[in-house]
Length: 221
Image (cartoon, rainbow, N blue to C red; front, side, top):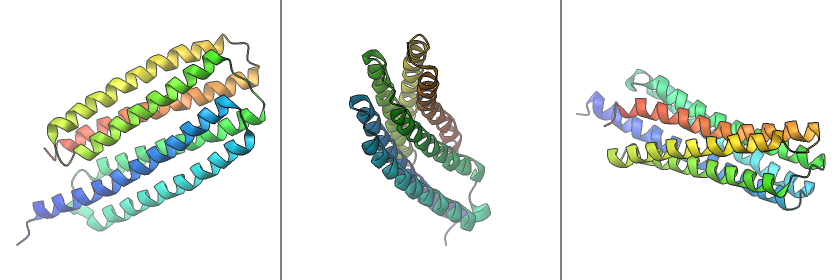
């Protein structure tokens, strides 16, 4: 006889497997955006950036298809799954990262079309910020992979995600001030600040996801 708790555990693991696939797709999408950022820094070739942007749009649709599957799964499970609201929040927050990545890519294309040229200092700091955001997302993914397997690893990855998010904050503050005091044209300055703010927002969303994972972990470990 299968007990309700055993069924719930089975459903939970199944949904986490889909969510792990969702975050993988979103991180792959972010990596394309990071390649796009490197291309922008090197030569600002608009055609190349638009090709990257199309790849991001396809990756975004794939990630959203996974989130729709997860929603259907949770709808089928119904009341058998406790903390359903936390799972919905988790999927929504990962979706928010994908939306923000798409927004960053769109703005990079337009910044290149405006023929904006950033200083070497700004370019280096921009790449540093992008790399640290990726490190934050990787730690988040590792926490998601560990949540159904190992409590110690899970908590370690949660701490690492938060530590990397703080590093993102530090880089962001320095970079934002450097942009404000640069000699960029006002339109270029505002668009660059938006890109930088959105990159920082991705790390902030990762930190919010960590809080959601903590709440879910209370019913697992």
